[in-house]
Image 1 (cartoon, rainbow, N blue to C red):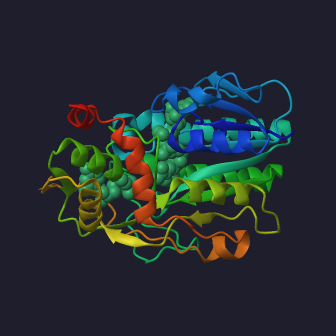
Image 2: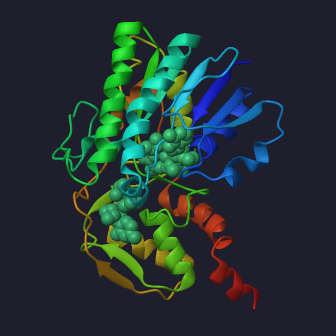
Length: 322
Ligand code: NAD
Ligand code: UDP
């Protein structure tokens, strides 16, 4: 059976990938230092004969004994409040961590897949964003630590592909949500759901006219699976994976309030610096090359995510059990 090493495997996306790869029969090695992840995300896999957890910082060195067929590099703080709190760790895991993960893939003859991001497009001036767009990033702004780390990671991945012949894949992930996001990670969805379930005001930043295109986690996992197993001469080129259904943040907040049946009102707070005004993936390439398309719409994805968060908001729990 193939053996797959997933860095960041105890995080939100990484843990769903661990589930998928174990279910597909792979041996999975999950490497995570738990800086933003949570062991509860993979607790159900501990003890599984094909699952191994290694607590380790991949910015220092990555090595495992034995064969490795795939390296999926997902380790990185990913939410704005996490990477603003951990700016240097974010730059290190995107640069040194990517270098180490690529070195492991080279040593093992493994296929390498990088979790990149729509943030490589920055505050985009082309809309929607195709992979051919080079982006509009402020390297010295607060978000630069994340955006530039991922841009460097892409460049390093292509260098290992071109110079060392490593078989590489790059997925540019657009805003993804679902169960196992941390309630306090500050991203729009957990923030709004937590606030709605507690009956607190919903904090919309700016006037809420900025847009995002939210993808449910199962669609992302399917896209990563297909990309990893894709082939052909341009297989190493980046591929956007995201749901093109674009929504303003104000409308998104209203959808969450309506779904939860909350009486929360919306309050407006200052927009963080360099917050992208629009974001929508052009997924032509994913459709053509991977035969991939999103299958879970926002109404369904939000319902599934609410089931998860309901059990994790103590105030809400207390209220319904009174
Ligand atoms: P997450 O914070 O839940 O997961 C990241 C995981 O990486 C955590 O478990 C964390 O402990 C681990 N980690 C961080 N630095 C590490 C290090 N030096 N060594 C070992 N482990 C380390 O975030 P997520 O949303 O699951 O994001 C996972 C990946 O996907 C990230 O690379 C992120 O940039 C990328 N991504 C996510 C999204 C999204 O919408 N969720 C969008 C674009 C890209
Ligand atoms: N946002 C918001 N209120 C919050 C958290 C986020 O209005 O409590 C906004 C944020 O400014 C951004 C959008 O929602 O415009 C998406 O933010 P998120 O952190 O989820 O992702 P990213 O900015 O990385 O796309």
